[in-house]
Length: 275
Ligand SMILES: O=C(O)CCC(=O)C(=O)O
Image 1 (cartoon, rainbow, N blue to C red):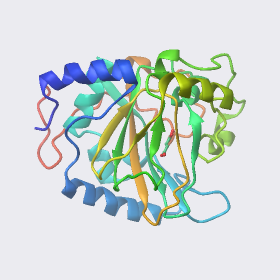
Image 2: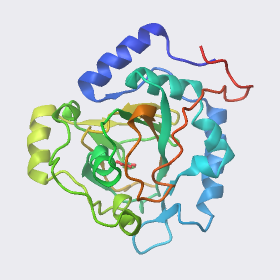
Image 3: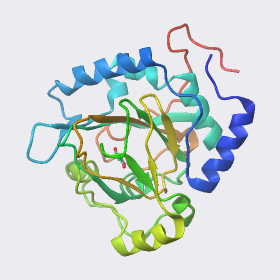
Image 4: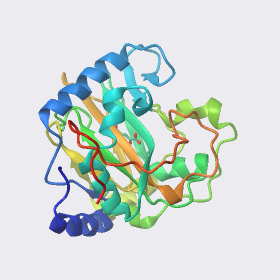
């Protein structure tokens, strides 16, 4: 079964603690990626609230909560490499808090402004601590021009910026501002400038199959897709079972209420033992 090597676990923890992100040497295999791409095509054609469009158009921006209604995605969250990586970085048993595919269509896919994910999870959902991790999986080749993620390495060590900002009053009605190009919880420009001077920037490019784990407090953004190439990135957020949110006001497809520990399962085989 594909898991991290013991030596890589130590490196993963150290790099993640220092930089706020970590890319393992092993990615996902092409056959699996093909299955996921096929599912993305199918889900993009569905009429359901989980499918979110770019403002004022029918271009799909993102698919949410896919592990709850698509078999391939339901199996993907149990991939041993992903579960091992999440449990290694958090040091605890995990469940899936959020699952989405951010699709930046050629020349139409829009930006994600500078933000910290934990701002949404703490303010909207009352997640007690940032002991969660998002694993981004490049579904397409991601390069400089199709809107890659850009991070400020080490910025997660500043904790939540503007931590006192209150939640919005009505989560169920306002969730579109948590997933659109105009986000409701952003990092102020002046703060981004100072952090950029301090931390520098890293653009996370890589071929399809690349995995990148990143910390909920890592300041990150991504630009419009100006290229002719699609940039789909699938993001699974694993949260520590003990860190489940206290306020469930957002739709289930944004915050999964099922906090059952995820058991690893080999992609094409029977359920794995759990040693
Ligand atoms: O897909 C991207 O480029 C950015 C995604 C992101 O920052 C988010 O979903 O919070």
